[in-house]
Image (tube, rainbow, N blue to C red; front, side):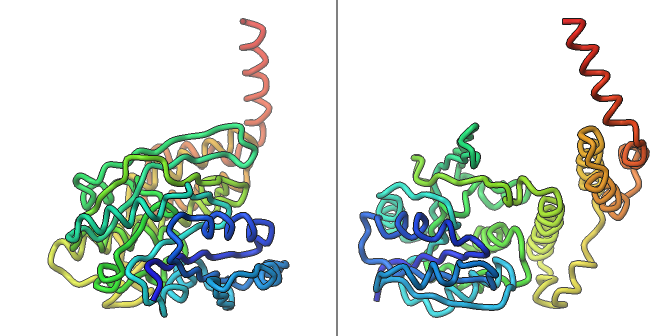
Length: 316
């Protein structure tokens, strides 16, 4: 039985296969099993996975179901003591698993250990470091998730007690899992940068449509957590996917979507602006949302912006 199982999911990312597996298998922790899930890729990803030769690698191919289902399926048969996810394209420090396993072995009451991380733009033009604190993780996760998905290790016994990943969550599946884990188990953080996260052109943080869906999944995960913590049943467990319609509408999220709409209008992306306006109005009617609606339908806004920037340059 391997000490740790690492699952990596791929969707049309054949160019990331070798680098990803090299990063995982170069770990100083050698007692490792790797499960690669091809989530219905239409390019050469599956062929690239089969071309990689290492007895520790097992390949699972499925129809496209999203990351939540891919991870649930990938971990389904794991028989190791510890579980980790590795996002395609990310890079582990060589001792990442060794350092985190040592932390969990030293703290038997701890169910989750994360680390600091560095995010890097695909063209290496920018970097950003994240330094999470495990103190008060259960409350922190209700407002934001500071724990890098590719930098978090789970004790399998803790993972099993909460039911693992839930296939419903195509986005923010890590937040949903961490919220449930935080209600039963202690968290820890290794205060070192153990993973580098690649932000590419298809990342959720870059694509407007994905960012919108991710925000809605996040709000639903928090709603489920709030219901559980109030002593009520988990809406997703009780009512299935339809429970997403039960989530209270959010003025805060309406204003966030309206802000995104105004940004899109300002840069001339009227399709994205209208998408975010519709999402904002679906949440709540606010003054900011009405302003964004007007902005999304003003065809001269990009030209007004260009003229404004020209005037500023002249003034300088």
